[in-house]
Image 1 (spheres, rainbow, N blue to C red):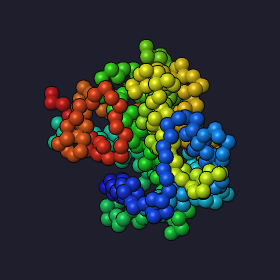
Image 2 (tube, one colour):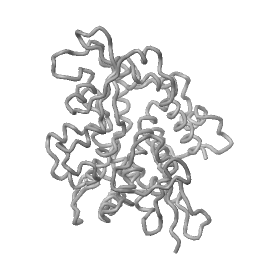
Image 3 (cartoon, rainbow, N blue to C red):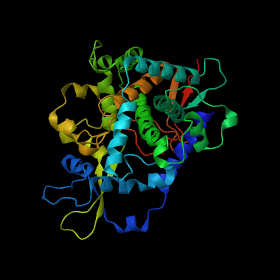
Image 4 (tube, helix red, strand yellow):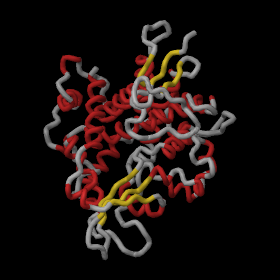
Amino acid sequence: MLIVLLCVAISSLSLLWWLSSISNEEKALSQTTFDDPAACALIIACIGYDCSGDRNIISKVQSRAYPNQRLVRTFGIDNAFTTTNENYRKDFRCHAKGKITLDDRTWKTIADLAKQLVGTAIPQPGSDIANIRLGSLGQSVTLKISLHTESKSTEYPSDADQKGLRKALGFIFPGVGPNARQNPLNLILPAYETMWRVALFCFIEVTFRQGARAEWKQVLIDFLADPTKARFEERGPYPSVVSAADIINEALRLYPPTKRVYRKLHMAGKNDPEIVAANIEACHRIPAIWGSDSWLFKPSRWSKIGNEARSAFMPFGGSTFVCPAKQDFGPRMIGVVVAALAAHITPRDWKLELCVGGPNGGEELGEEPLVSDRNKYEWIEISRRLS
């Protein structure tokens, strides 16, 4: 139950963050969104947004931190996303990289934990439980794995110890003080709040989407049994000839963890600063780059990906501010969560109910991509098929 409390608390605070009032200063700044990959790369790097030669005159850490200050107000965190201290940003990134550099034995432990968590959550045939909130399950599994990665422990406190998010985190991370730089959410929030949604959508694509190939699930299940980097990247031996990495990269392309990346820039030659957004989701769906089927979930496209597409692929940022999870931890951890779900939930036994807008808001899974708005599928469920 503690994990349920943490999921609810973090999700509720995340919603408050999105709905929280914008400061008067923010309201006064003009805001522009860019869809061109070259412009988006410049924005992410806090350089500018065009080839005019003008450059941003605000420091890069300030440009990045400013749009994220609501995270500070909501969660009380101080991490690489929110700080204006360049030395602390570098130290934090180094610390984070150390936390997520795992050996094969640890990956095996995490894979086994994921299988156990999902297996325990799925009711056995004959159970009175006929429906499962899929979003809640994905959140719970992802949060527990994130906590395990941060704390290196699978021991969680009892129900009697639940007195709020901070105290709950205090039980898992004893000795943590009130200093924002000691807040465990500094590391947990980026892992949890971005990873679970990608994992959920990827699981739906490989399990319930019409046209999904059975080999995709088998590739992921094989990877779960041997969660090494070599197995993650290995293509074959199935007819679809895709790797687990191909499947996860396609999920990251179609459903990037952050749809838009915001920066505050003050361009040389302009009187006022402005807020600009790099539309990552749009960059990942440009037909001229990804093909006329750019809106389809198609892992096989990664076997022949070109340089232009690689440059336009920015699920983990880029340049100065590339996420340390990009190279291995992020994609492989998403693969573990998706594989654990796929190993226990099959379309033969379970039916997907999108439940848009509430428990009775039925909607069919059509050909279009899932809508990646934060609360679109809050009530998404799977229901057991009648035998």
